[in-house]
Amino acid sequence: MGISQQEALDLFESDDLIGIGMAANEVRRKKTDGRIATYQIDRNINYTNFCTEYCSFCAFYRPLGAKDGYILPLESIYEKIEEMLGLGGTGVLMQGGLHPDLRIEFYENMLRSIKERYPQVHLHCFSAPEITCIAEVSGLSLRDTIARLRDAGLDSIPGGGAEILDDEIRVRISRLKCRSEEWVEVHRAAHSLGMRTTATMMFGCGEEARHRVNHLELLRRIQEDTGGFTAFIPWIFAPENTPLGKKIPEATAFDYLKTLAISRLYLDNIDHIQSSWLTPGIKICQVGLQFGADDVGSILIEENVVYAAGVRNRTNETELRRIISDAGYIPAQRDTLYRSYVLKQVQ
Image (cartoon, rainbow, N blue to C red; front, top):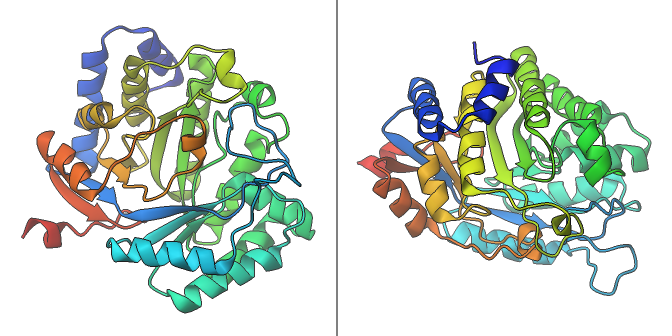
């Protein structure tokens, strides 16, 4: 059993960063192979930037009718997948804005077309807010929407759109987006249909420690009931070029590492915790491997959402393998479901 809500709050108040990190690392060693840290080669594809939600933390979206708005044609998506495959990639993480005119048939056609051409590619697509939007636009239940997307080729669902799963914060930063209950409903429905999903948290957006703990508690309860989460991925809000960023102080590396470690201690029933390099940077990502994380994420061949918010960090497979090795671990490529190719890498 992981730590209690009060214990988590006490740790957020503590200055003993090293002690918290050591405790988290002990949990990590019990849950995963302590010799190995994993990474993935996949590609983010943002199929549209049109969105009606106007979240205060987002610099990527464009309102309907904007001249620089787009919906990617299938041929452009194919080209991006070809490049990913050429780099040894195995999956696509596809997400976009919430478009009020795209019904489920659009998404079914996109998924089927990709699967027919690239049956080996794992499709990890559409955040809970997107799926909620697709269901509403199409007049379907969430369960029927997910089942139809699965039957068209969807393999798993990313945890995007969670931000902070506490409606006191969601009303403040994304008042038009789905509420916590709807995010939970999407993931529970997916798990009940036999699909795996990931869980995420974007923090440093003006919330308090209690909101983060409420978020972690919600995830732990879902995992207790379903066992459907493969991993938890926390990251820092990127404030540049966003309305919200003008109002709040930026999260620190200290805060990131503490939150990462507390997450590992709290989410004792989720196997994998990812250390992010995109917003904290490569060096902090590397330190995160000593604070409970067992994975450094993807090389992110293409990333547009956080880039629009001013983040310019970039990496490649060689660098991710180097930072894992320099931290004292064996680097191993994995797929989207955290099945690793350890033997191929180590031999």
